[in-house]
Length: 354
Ligand code: NAD
Image (cartoon, rainbow, N blue to C red; front, side):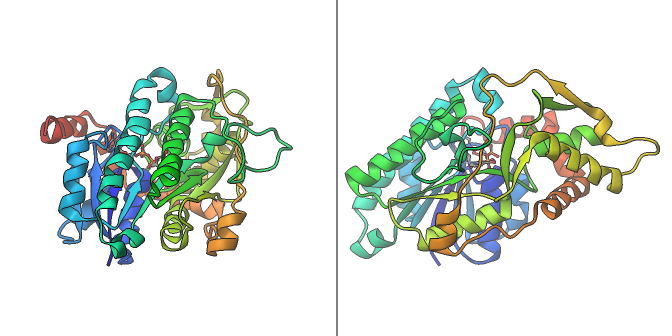
């Protein structure tokens, strides 16, 4: 079985990917994660005792550490999930986005290129550097514009999107200049279990359960294409297996929804699963001033990955959303933990300055 160095594997998508990769025996995994606020090692608790899974706490910007890990574990694949990922945070503090998303990715590429050059010809052929990116690099669409294709020009509008766009340009340059075997995926909005409750769907579920207001930016008519996280993970594995070196694959759910619709659907599910007399969760909806520079619409044309790799999204949005709500209802310990100061302190005590 091949070995992958996965970065950011204690976060939402990375953890779901690692669990699936181990369950299906796709890959042996080394997980390098800095353990920022968005991470949770509990995501991976079920891998305790798995000899083909190793966790290392550390920063992708740390060249010595990344070099050591490549030499020590000799991975065949690098999958770069690690990122600062929240647009609102990037508006208030863009610096850390540049550091992790741009400088960190550059460091990974730089170390990978020297590592790759020293591999045997057979291992060189096998090696892949897969960069996980986002549809936000393409900017915003008008209602009547066609969905983003792989050749849509980049036009990032938020500091987060700009940092992901910059990182991608280094990935591209390393393929063209050094022939490093890179692949890139640009995915639409993910939803599902284990997402940190600052993002729209878990925030809405948990605020509603707490009886707090459900903030919606502007008029709530901003459109996102939603993809179930497991569908995303399966797409990533298809790209690793069959993707053409140097290419980008757009991954989407064929599922455009306004933010207001998403929130109303969650409220309707909660009305059914956790009913309260004479009360609808939708009464908690509260329109708040719009996010600066808020992109109006994202939509992904994923015909390339469907045609060339035979992947397609499987999960229906209504059933995926219901499963997601149910997961947050069933996992109140997880929720309390990620929200608690105790967990943040435990992280500091166990991992800071190591
Ligand atoms: P997340 O914020 O849940 O997880 C990010 C993980 O990266 C965390 O575990 C964090 O500790 C780790 N990390 C951050 N900085 C690091 C560093 N310097 N070194 C090592 N680890 C570090 O993010 P996510 O939602 O799981 O997103 C994963 C990737 O997928 C990101 O690259 C993101 O841009 C991309 N993406 C996300 C979505 C989405 O809807 N969530 C959509 C498309 C693409």
